[in-house]
Structures are given as structure tokens and as C-alpha cells.
Image (tube, rainbow, N blue to C red; front, side):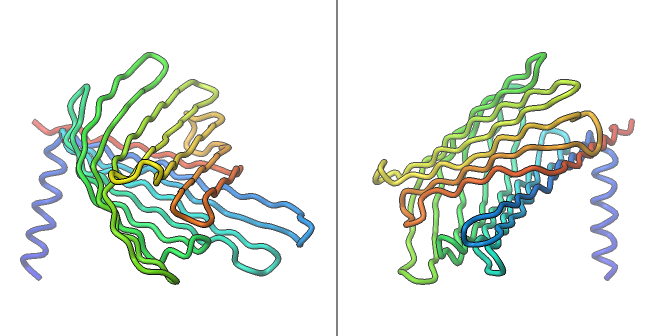
Length: 237
């Protein structure tokens, strides 16, 4: 127990004597519609949370979709991504891990691990970044044999910050190294109204396309609220 207390005190001391920034950006959106088969309801949670300590950053990206048609569960889709990066003003290098599961695509678990790097640029209107990673993907299905695959991963991200609105777009293109006809396109577009406030209104579009699945396209547009929090801890002298 004393070792745990000592480790905790060392961690607090390191954080408080470093240039540290905690950023929380989470949103909850929903969708309701009447169909010929009955009422359809869906929820989507998305989070982009990060902890920056000096030049190192831990970024967590979460996306969870839940859908019902009448009283039957039709969507239970989860993606969790974790990046540990070393940041420079204009570039970064990182390791990445991602875990997925999907009810629609009968994926029990989908694990990704890889390394990569990227470039970024700040402008008066916002930020632009591009990155590349090499990934190994291991997929366990509920109904067919498990698979393993090496993939390229190209990512483009643009973020526009204005007083009355914000626009964020992030998209991945991930072809197999063995077969470029086997690819994944995943991305989100978010339009935020009054982004400078802690709680704001959001319109979100989520696209998930996989050529290796019988259900190739998952596409949802949702409306809801977004919560943002940023805390900086200045370095002690």
C-alpha cells in the first residue's frame, strides 16, 4: 500500500511540475424516426479526450452507437482508440491501439495496433493535420473464422473554430497491404453551434464503410449536445 501511495505522489508531483493540459470533448446525440416496420430510435456517444504533459500526449477517441427498431436491438457498435504521441510544433510520432466490436457485422472483437507519424499546421481559422500509420488488425467474428491483416492507415483532420460555430472533420482510409480492394473508410463530421460555451448544440455525421463485411455501410446523422472542458496546469518554477 505504501508503494502505491508513493507512486501516486510521484505522479502528482510530475504533473504539477510539468506543462500539463487536460481536454475533455464529449457529445451525446440521438435519432428518432417512424418507419413502416415501427418506430426507430438511436443514440450515439462520441468523445475526444486528451492529456498533454510537456511534449507527450495521450489521446482517447470513443464512438458508441446503440439502435432499436421497435423493441429489438439493431445496433451495438463500439470503437475505442488510444494514441500515445510525442508532439513537435509541426509534426508528431505515435503508437496507436484500437478496439472495436459490432453487432451488425457480427464482430466479437477487432484489435488494432500500430505506429505512425504525421504533420500539422495551425491557421487563424483552425487546424489541419495529416498522418500515416502501419497497423496490424486481428478480428474475431461470432460466425466465421478469425482473420489477421496488415493495413495502411491514412488520416486527414480539419478543425475550424469560430465564435458562433465550429466544424470538425476526421476521416481514415485503411487499405489492406495485400489487397487494395479490401479497405475501410471511417470518419466523422461535426457541426457545433456556440462552441465557445461549455455546453453546445451539435449535428454529427458518422460514416463506417468496410468492404470485407456483408454489411458494408453504416451511416448515421444525429442531433444532440456537446460538453467541452479544458484545464491547464502551468509549470512550477
